[in-house]
Image (cartoon, rainbow, N blue to C red; front, side):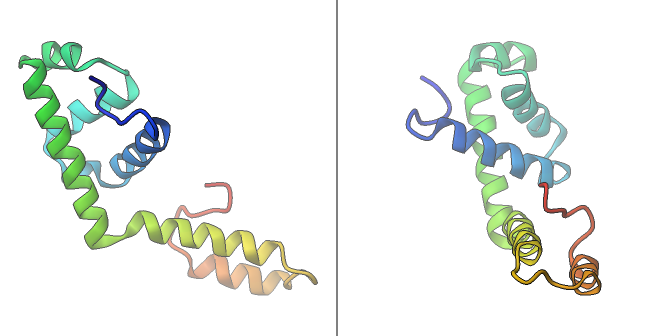
Length: 120
């Protein structure tokens, strides 16, 4: 049985990866490693369990708990949602007709969190 639901597999994997990128430092080393191996190395649960020295079910439970924790953290902090809104703001400010003056765009960019660009 796959870890992600069939109908929204790619969407779930992308969201899980984005949350892991933002909040990996808040997980334990074992949680982080399990999630990275699942997402980046595309290991099966059996392979993941073998790599971590646990059963397939143990690996599944570890990743599920880790994923749930990442969703909970995002629910509390909302950094991924903030990043998406910032990107949308940048895209909207660049597509105005007539175009916004460069100094206004520069001011908007200066107010956004570091690392947020319209190519994210």
